[in-house]
Image 1 (cartoon, rainbow, N blue to C red):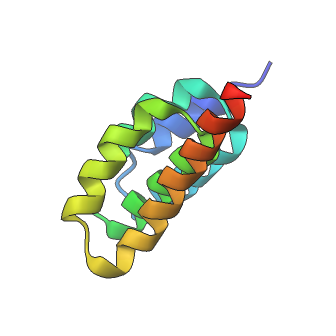
Image 2 (cartoon, helix red, strand yellow; image 1 turned 180 degrees about the vertical axis):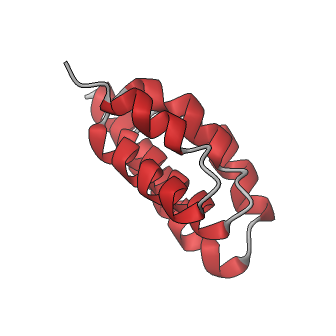
Image 3 (spheres, rainbow, N blue to C red; image 1 turned 90 degrees about the vertical axis):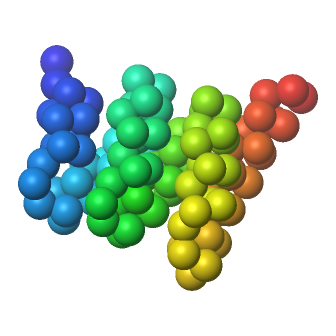
Length: 101
């Protein structure tokens, strides 16, 4: 059994921003709901690209727990980064709507 999930969560804390970016992307693609909390923590990364990849990954996961933190990030993030965050929130809202059907 693979421990890819644990490895990727660990890599979210790596010193290299490229490694953190790749880990966030991998976690979004894995679709494991355990990734939501570590990715929410990553929304406050020092590197803007890592923050936005974490937002994207949370959108891919579609978990409503991420909406509040994404809204907070949206309010403080640069204007040119807000589109990605908005898209992530829309993806989550779509999953929530689909679950009501």
